[in-house]
Image 1 (spheres, rainbow, N blue to C red):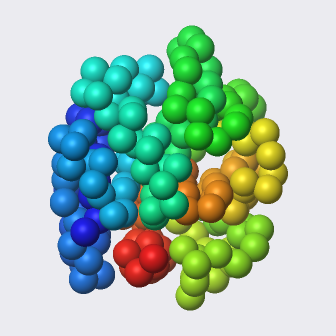
Image 2: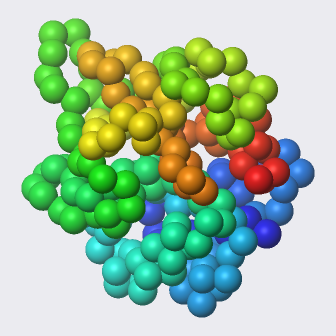
Length: 201
């Protein structure tokens, strides 16, 4: 069973329905004990980093998420769920993240003709073959909505780059953990294929 972490900040039903579309069962869960038992875990999220990390703490979800990430069991972060994995975010202040992947979360710099947030379809440039991208072209388009992006300390953690005023990490991968800045549940066939690949892990 795929478990989607519900901490009050994400369009969880859209993610669940996308898994249903590819024939995979996914449950939405708020219970720390059940999350600790998950065989595959999804950390989604939309909204402010500060509110999200506080919600995870308030609901006693930090520990089971950290344990799952260390366990070797499949883990997928989506959008804000990617950013929460990092050491620190500079969104409206400075806030400590989960510290699973070394690096920071920073805002796109203001540039002429660059609209922020980055919203809409954009390409990813995969750095290497990864099972979650099996059957997906190396320069496929996915759907993005974000004003902040992750800057990993180590480029080896980057699974794909995207260009938007700068080159930023649009997907990271380390051992059992994969996370993407884009929304696979909003990315039509390519996004469904990515979720299908995760379900098959």
